[in-house]
Image 1 (cartoon, rainbow, N blue to C red):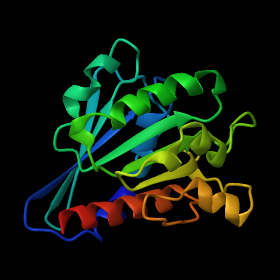
Image 2 (tube, rainbow, N blue to C red):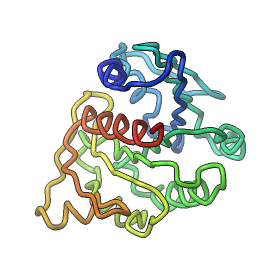
Image 3 (cartoon, rainbow, N blue to C red):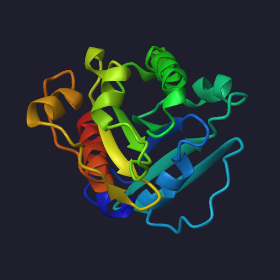
Image 4 (spheres, rainbow, N blue to C red):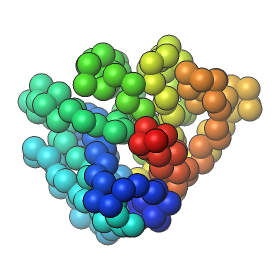
Length: 207
């Protein structure tokens, strides 16, 4: 879980790291956060405003800001972006009618000066549903391959079950789907893979 990843991070005493968790309403952000923190996910209510979850380990304090995704709240997202070390964006892979909407919101976020150069991790959530689009298809729709100013990765997952879903496509296509600006390619298969990537990105930014 999240705690095991944090234990791999090294930093000065009392160092704080800030992660912002965003996405449309009903994308599964709060469920994902609870799953990453190894908490019970049986009862989840829509986030009204924001939740902050902090974990202390090895002289580090990781503050994760889970901000509501309702249309009325989105105009306030940018107020929470300052000093962000990493942006996590969650997408409901099964709600294809909202792909254009969520893509527009993500595009606006990445254009914000507060997030210049900040690594981006996209969780393609709800892969346990038969109507879910593959992570590679979502990456193409979001034009993630055009991002040259930041490291990024897309991670297929099911926050409800806690299991990742391997993208069903050839190695060449998979590599294109998760290729970052430095040409790096990984094979995401689980929530833990996503958290390992978070760990590496934060460590690089704190050097």
